[in-house]
Image (cartoon, rainbow, N blue to C red; front, side, top):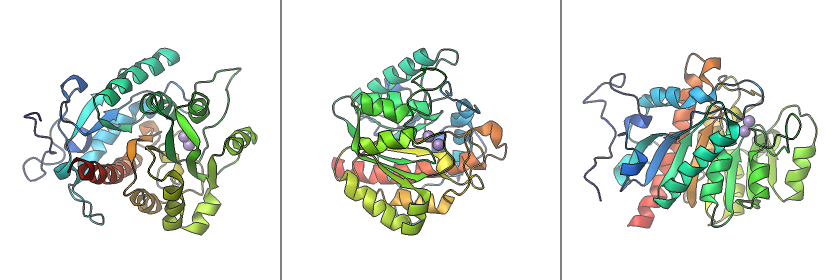
Length: 321
Ligand code: MN
Ligand code: MN
């Protein structure tokens, strides 16, 4: 155990608008010095795989800023995550804004180190492409299960004549590469007009459970998560939260908004349904500050991260004791 104090700066000692912005006001601890860290909060300031409206490269900064609003205790779960495990802001991964494949390589190299250090990564993106290099690291030994909240399946094959690495293709690549188990993958909140049904066909052929928003709305958050928990069981599971699963009324700051989405409250209720699962990493992606100067999309993202950190911390603390 290191000498580092892993608790966030208290708002009773220093007001929330003061100081250098880190995720949840946690200490900034570079990966090389992260001995003793259980959950690493990591920014990936990169949107080189965006096919339409860019901006998530600015996500980590604004999420750090808005995450100063997050307090210590979860009022429903009765969990104070930063009291029961060690969390730190590990900073941002190396990126390359002018070379897509090199950018992906840098991100992947970083996450292999995170996994080797035994740290559970809680990532703030970045566009959704970044889930692929993360899955390559967390799924290197065996393909992982996934609970995926998104308006889009991100199971497309290629864009613009054979480009296979984009934010519309990460999970198809992850399945092909054997780092993601399609039969233990559930996608929740799919909706919107589509180019064709090819992504849907790929998902169904490989056994991905694709749940449209209409079905999720009819079931309600508790039943949706009952099914998700039953599907993944005790398997190591990755949780990927695309902010566009929320309705644009709640999260306008994203590149590919789709109307008719979840409320922030429904999303919070669903994330609480992850309690007890063996989560080996999570991300919140596609927060695009240029489309939302109010910062409320980033605030929603920060709060989703807090929900995720609470359920991950409870499980890690139980494993350690
Ligand atoms: Mn999406
Ligand atoms: Mn997505």
